[in-house]
Amino acid sequence: MAADTTDEELAAGWEASVSSGKGDADDVWNAETGSGGPQASDATQSIAQSAVGSERILNQDEIDSLLGFSLEEENGAKRGGIRALINSALVSYERLPMLEVVFDRLVRLMTTSLRNFTSDNVEVSLDAIQSMRFGDYLNSIPLPAILAVFKAKQLDNFGLLTVDSNLIYSIVDVLLGGRRGTVAMRVEGRPYTTIERVLVTRLVEVILHDARKAFDPLTAVDFELDRIETNPRFAAIAQPANAAILVKLRIDMEDRGGRCELLLPYATLEPIRKMLLQNFMGEKFGRDNIWEGHLATELWSAPTALRVVLDEFKAPLGKMMNLQVGDTLIMNATPDSKAQLMCGDIHLTHGQVGRIGQNVAMRVEAPITHAAKKRVMEAR
Image 1 (cartoon, rainbow, N blue to C red):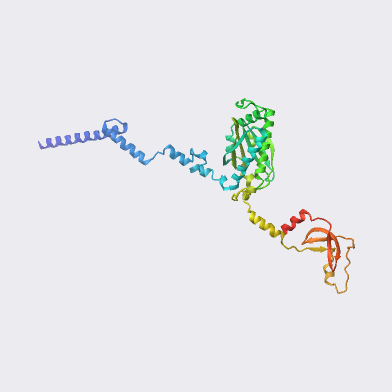
Image 2 (cartoon, rainbow, N blue to C red):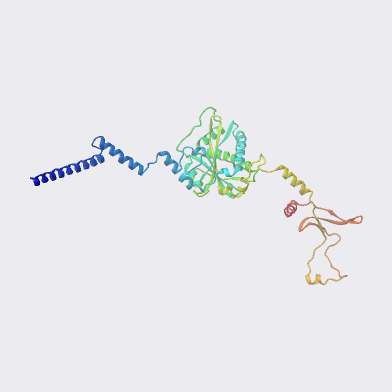
């Protein structure tokens, strides 16, 4: 009887363990499949929370910040993230203080010149000055447009001036007597005519002339128009990865107008980089008038030693070392020969030697040349 009880107890315990194991397996299955009531939903949430805690998902703002994209880039905000590393080779124009002064002067000059050019009320405004890569700029040019390639002679490099279609049709309309208050007609899908290209070429020449005058207080730079292009691929004046300064100008003629953009590669500005680094001190572009006047006064009053040379000849050193008292040196000068007035080794002028009282004098018979003055100043 005891043996039977033991067997029954063992069978009941075995059945209980099997049923409990089955319940645990069902709970796990319900948690994984999302079914099984409130207890299953709680298990699912705990599993999801553990997964989120182990791998956190970034939102869109954090992704943009990591990559360096921002809606404030057009307003000149500083880049960050990966884009800051990629564009680290670009130099900000703010490191060249005089550059903004030059372009402000260009805006004032263009306002006057374009009023005379179009006989209309013209307003020129400076929209932005920014640095970017040359290849990115070529890809961002809205077509159709006219691209003027010009050369800076003294800087021995090139620049690019882009005139958009709105400004092209507005200039053509104004110069050919279009009525005010009407929108300039745009004909899409056709190349620019010869008349349009010639009129835009005249506009470009006016802008380049003003650009030369804007750089004059800083340094002499002649901007000469090289060619006119309509395809950006043929206006490649630098490598795509090279940095450049882009100046965006807005030209308004009452109810008409458009944009023109002036692009100067950093390689073009490199020869005058030191001048562009100086601080702005008024319209004199960094010059100190007080020090300049003091220096000029001191230079004019500085003493100068002059020599009057009657004649020069060459002789062996041994003969000169053996000269004795009473020896005679024969020179080629005659009473009518001109004496040379020298300042060191620099020839200034010539004249006739004579006598005034007990003093030997020289009468100057030719003015001092500008080259001689320059050489004396450089020698000082």
